[in-house]
Image (cartoon, rainbow, N blue to C red; front, side, top):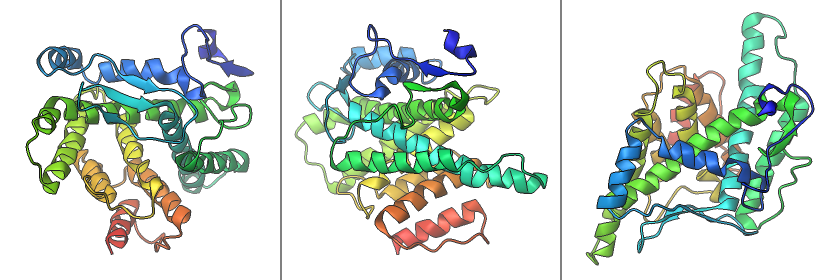
Length: 320
């Protein structure tokens, strides 16, 4: 554990005896499971009940291999949640890019302006690396390519001097994974029996399942916010980035059996009761701007609105 106090040199978390997988994201698999199992103080008991009463599988499958991104799901037959290694890599890259771009392009310049001096110097190198990592994440949607951990930011090996730009995204990433797992968990305990029954389900029924899975997942995670709220921000950012990650697969937000992606994002932010000047509005804007630039959607942006006002204006533009 000497890496905790390391200030210089390379930090390398990989241990071949415990880390399974082919991609640098492998070093966070155990943390994902621990975080999910401890979603809130009574969640271990809820899980035990789900195993015994609802038939939820005690195993979460991680599909390894050099494959393009495939999204998470829960198997209808055995109620087993499935995550793909490449999807987890994609999610970490999105998390890192959105967070670092927000910090370097929005938060730090704002602090400099408020202070009337350069508290934080410009950091074009790390900004460029974050933008390049977003390009890599997008490429995984189309075809698999190896994550170059020698030159690209990643959670496995990194300079101690840059640890905040890795370890903060690690925190938000594990919360994003937790949101996804809680979403699938809700399907497992509330919806799969209906799907297995052969009962006819209208399209609105499927959409209702997805809305309930999002809402219940957020509620489960909010129960895990400590009384001193020290983990509230990571929870809020993780949920937000988990939903932002769904935008980059296509230029539209239409889904056959899911709510529109922008509606899911709005519902989540409103359920979390994000305050008017919260950082999450800015993070959501960074994520939506990346989507805008990815597909040339030509949204209208302005500095004359607050982040919250700009967010809702973008939602209006998406719907138009």
